[in-house]
Image 1: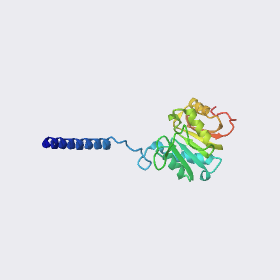
Image 2: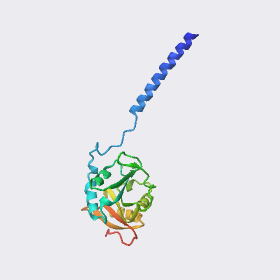
Image 3: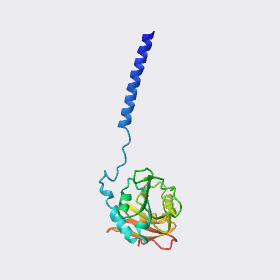
Image 4: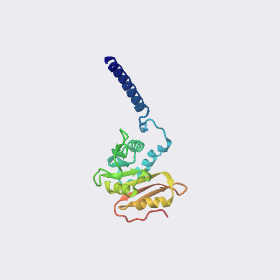
Length: 202
């Protein structure tokens, strides 16, 4: 009888070892890959941030050094590094997934910040928003009166798309709308405050 129990226990131990090894191998091989970080990615699609922020900083009604900036949909952190590289002192970057150490996790549709705490809000991820009106509403809410919201487009868009984006903003006015040589819109800036100016698309 003891021989049968010993054989059963040996088989059970062997089965447990094989099962555990199999599970560990699966966890190791199927683990999610980390998000690319600015130090390991050389994508040319992100090389526009320094020039974009440099142009923006020259047209802001305040200094970037003394301002508080919020970057939405900012993973993996290229925009954060570009803005900090221009000397911006207080930069907060958020996205639905965190990308340490640059980007914290937060839902851009429901930001956990007080009203009017930022001077500048920037996004180039509005096209990926589930609820664009809510996304823009949160941008406007956390930017102080007189602050600036900037929407950049990852690809050039037509005037109609730009008008739709402008229509999402309720509390501000368009202060700038950059276009390429083909009259395609590349980014738009909105000044928070009373809406008293028509979009300059004509």
